[in-house]
Amino acid sequence: MLRPLRALSGILGKRRFARPALTLAAIALIWAISAWWMVNRNAAGRTYTAAEAIPPRSVALVLGCSRQLPDGRANAFFAHRIQAAAQLYHAGKVSYFLVSGDKHGAVYDEPADMRDSLIRAGVPADRIYRDDAGFSTRESILRARWIFGQTRLIIVSQEFHNQRAIWLAQRQGIDAIGFNAAEVTVFGSLRTRWREVLARSDLMLDLAGIRTPARPPGAPQTIPI
Image 1 (tube, one colour):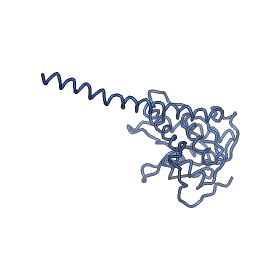
Image 2: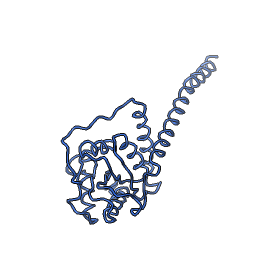
Image 3: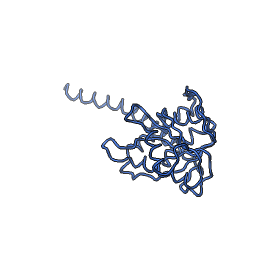
Image 4: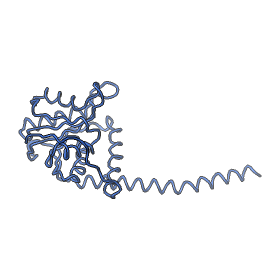
């Protein structure tokens, strides 16, 4: 007699917790879809895939990522961004680059890797400025505005990343457009895509007024435009 009662109690308990869990899952899904749609819609008409079509700007912000994957292979995201940035320069669309990424120690240095790769691609060293504290897309945008004084930028990254960066830039008073680096195959970027879903969902905290991005500390640096 006790065994059936325990089984019934277990079923009822699971149902009691199942409904709130499903509700939370539905809210999270709606939140993520809304954020994705909002970012895409906001960037419509502001990203370009052909260098000859993009309006010229004095400065391009190249968003950082690791030059190598954890297994030692070359990171295609990095290579495509460098290729796109060099294409802009050789097409006469930009005069200076701000390469912004994560630097933590002598070994891992995204801005240095980007700078060295751009030089190898034919961009003069004196046309490249480094931001070693671009630990996230948000920080790269904030620092481009408040440390480097930029209010008009071309942002260089993959399209999905550019779309989010444009949304962030506009909220800092930056007139931003994006130049899309070549995409990476879906099978090679599932983790990156999932992170993008989470990053876009996080933007809704700004939109809801729950969080206000703070102006970053640091002495201003001048890019001679």
